[in-house]
Image 1 (spheres, rainbow, N blue to C red):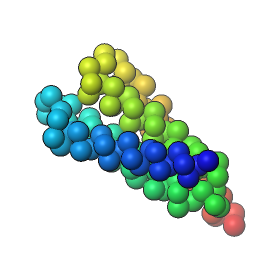
Image 2: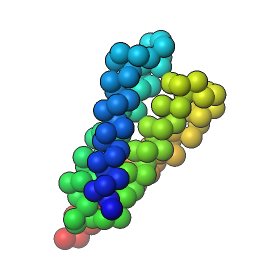
Image 3: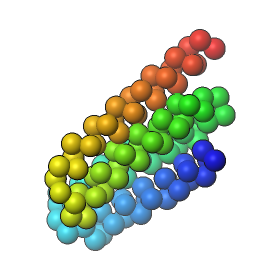
Image 4: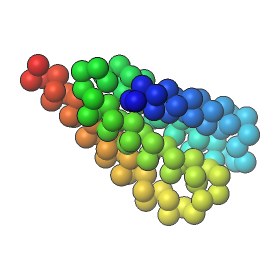
Length: 108
């Protein structure tokens, strides 16, 4: 199931980046879509790469990427700016996922 969610996440990231490049209503909105798309895509690919060895961290990367990116996407499409206060929760999950993966790989 991780692979399915990672593939969907990557597809959403590409769509967000494309919309940011061609249909965003302003430069700030385009930047939110670009940043969200970049982070979501990187972490979807990372989750695919590690899911066979580090399932927990892969899930953490997908969840963190989704929270981080979706809050930026929401603001780009008109959600209140306070959504930006949620974004760091996603970033924290990304950091935890990477540290967890590193710990699993370190201990062998």
